[in-house]
Image (cartoon, rainbow, N blue to C red; front, top):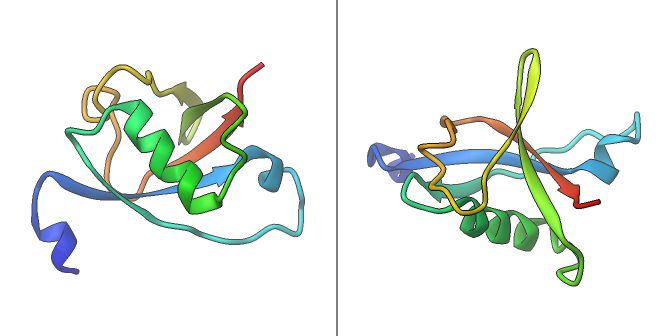
Length: 94
């Protein structure tokens, strides 16, 4: 894939939390990102991919083997520790 030949580019896989709660849900939506994006920029791309209700507040969680890490919206995603192929969860803010 030509997009990934640039070291600044990555693809992540976001899922809306409400969709993950259904045992029958099985889908992958990959979105293109780059390490200079902020968490807010990435959240906007993820919400667009899922065509989520933009009137609500959301946050992004990085899903790792034994933990879920909040992605700061004001920090670039490289500093947040994202890697190519990471799964993300889009969670409605409380």
